[in-house]
Image: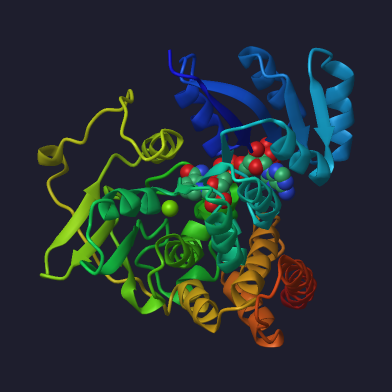
Length: 385
Ligand code: NDP
Ligand code: MG
């Protein structure tokens, strides 16, 4: 029998993490060598017990000590250092990074630095430090396999295309729950409305990013780093049915589209299986029943986050890191009822204006930019509250 792949899942209690566990299932293909969460220690211990995993990490110290008290059949590592140790010491062949936010950067860097292949759901890692992260992967020979559905689609479309054949990339957006509304109509929308995504069921942060279209902005930056394509050749297209995930335009004018069910297990499985399509218990799409696929441009007046992300991307250096940090603070404040929906873009814009982008010489520059951006974004939130 072929040797089982040693898999480490970071963020196993989240939306992507749980779906990844479903895919790994009872099968013989993977050996689970570790799991992690921020603070959901009971859910994490339950996952570990059911699956016979012997090491877990919890970033929250209090949660880690509670877990260690009640779980005696395995080891609990604590804090951000514990998470890094889990990556360093688990002997994994493949790490799935399904953390949310810039907290995912440390584990991404650790895995790639060790030459471990990375299935990457945590797009923030690439947004914040894409240049350095990709250079590191190249230096150690570790592969980055995208888990984001649009990027998994593009990865599949691009494989087998000759150099110079591909002219443009397109990532699609559902448009989120507020598609078609004008900016002034978005002033009063509630957290509950923003969390009601029309086609995807996801964690809270990315659901709000989808409602503001920041998610597409982050994904443009992610695509740029993953595929080495300049920003002016990456398009965003609103496609409310969420069936086409990515398109490439070839030199002769032909376009190839990736059509798939709006189910993240397709992309997760593609990444975990090393960019291969394997059998999944998912109903295929009945296009005759779907009837029509529609497309429209993104409305950057109503959803300025997409424009802000593109501007930060083009400015480069620490600007995408600042954009991301301000977005995390603003989304958190919105979810806590401390900031109106339109305040999210305002906080990000003010933070970007206040911090001059710096070149990325080393990862330390990013940690400092992230810290400063958060501080300024917090003040901007307070001023708007
Ligand atoms: P969730 O919020 O559902 O889960 C996040 C996971 O990370 C949980 O296990 C959580 O632990 C853990 N976590 C949260 N914060 C920290 C932290 N500071 N340090 C360490 N661990 C932490 O997120 P999603 O699964 O929705 O998203 C994960 C990533 O995948 C994001 O980058 C998102 O953009 C991307 N993605 C998600 C998609 C989806 O369908 N959900 C689609 C495409 C991309 P705890 O349970 O303790 O909170
Ligand atoms: Mg996506």
